[in-house]
Image (cartoon, rainbow over all chains, first blue to last red; front, side, top):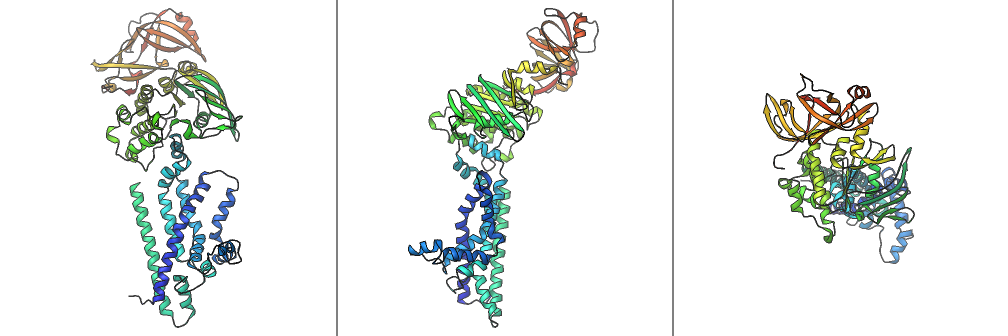
Length: 227
Length: 358
């Protein structure tokens, strides 16, 4: 049995909460952005592509800093939300947003690969059979993108579990509030006496990540067999 | 169906220009690949937008650059049968068939699923996955799906090109009879002269993005006889096969024909005979190795390249033979003259066998 303290349990719960929320929140946006990039011709498409992929190449700390500028009390969006009585910075919401932004490129890439693999004639067939754009998206494109959606979601979920750089800047490292597994490990690692505690949490992290990947592989196989 | 298209579209070095009005229930669009046929069909279906021009179908404007009209594909009620069937792999046969039907306004639903399934012989397949169908079955489901959308025009974009020869000619009767039975006009696109002749009478000829002329499929076949290595293909419907002297004897409108024994499994069917495989004699040859000798009269002559096509009336049947002009002079062939036409038993090639039930 791995020895875990109550704050460790909190960290595990928060990590799962943040990863789930970030993934669910990003899914509709990811589908919309992947659809736009794959199927719609418009000016400035390359800008959108660069923008959604930027968090992949930027250091997460930089992403976190930008988010802090945007969502902080003096920030452009933060001040508006503050007036409405909503506080983002140093709450779980901030951790979710940080994870969502950092993991978004991974999600969108997988969905895109799925969508680009769809035979364009199927979409043409659907349109000539009387389906509008939205109808075609829901009844043809989405069902055929399921493998991409599954792959993207699990990648993003796994990435969110490991999110550190952006989270620590916008959400801080508050035990029981915003302290996820990586942040807790960071704290343990900083103190010379908590080596064992750090190791336990690392083990938990490995178990969860392996579990996610295992689930992903099983689902991918199942979908492949069905198709 | 009255269709008017006056459109232009260019991409890169390729440009397409078409200007025509046709009033036909069955129309062919013929041209080699790259001649612009598929682009034309795409513009008609609303999948591609012309650079400029107008498209009218039965008094309704589908596209007009000057009036800024461009109906979306789903508003045009023009269904398509694609080269590669384009069946939805995540839906079973039944759901594929009903895809267009469910999106058609109830008032316009005149074709019932049961009737169509029976006509296309799809009864046993309804709950199968489309990934487990044979090529011919897939194309029949694709045709059924398009028809069930109750369209006012059906576009068939080389629907047979992905099938092998024997299947192609089995599908053609379905393509034709289904749209005739349900009263849906169609536009058939192909680069095969034989397919064209089986599917349409009138056709538009496209070359390098330009509509060259409006002609008939028969005219096209005759025109191309002189330059085609296969000559003119005579299409013969043969039936009532009986075995005789180790060969197969068939009844044809123009008399009895002997074919090689390899056809013994075909009770009746569609056969081709090239104009190159017919030899003409002025008088009855006493002995000849070719097993078929038909007495016929010349009812027409036409030039095609360096060859001369001879249209022959044999009983109720008509054949086209090709000869060089010198031979015509020697044999004194002119309209009204009597000749004997010979062809070998092995010169016939079966295109499709016809099921006894149909």
